[in-house]
Length: 200
Image (cartoon, rainbow, N blue to C red; front, side, top):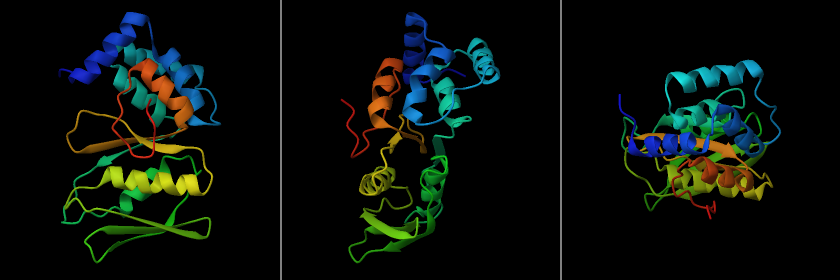
């Protein structure tokens, strides 16, 4: 199966400058906070995958979504009109390595047809609103609201959406932006335009 153009460009960049799984993991590790380095066994498994199928994007997903648990992926289309965002909040919180635990997540319709999400974190209630996208999850609005909560509570990490070529899936990393964004530029990881995160 052919790779999408952005994956081909990313893989070509890695091959051109000699980046492999070990180098990529070393560049991404600081962006994931206080997580340990990947084991030699884990690195060798990534190298085998890299040798079997040259796809830099999949290697990045395996690094972020592996033992470090800093990646969430989900379908952004719901079966009902006014998509239910409560599961998305749980998926995102699960990608934080227990740094950002949420409970009692609720979604309610506002009088102007916006959506309000409310949840508890460490016994405190937080909420934010964003526009509805019908049966599609408003992922930018959700990430913007969550990132504002992270800023409010003094947590340095942010949720950053990775570009994946469309198709209705959301892929989000929970990372330290100051460390992740330079690594993303160096590794040619394309990002969606996520509010509240500066890319340049």
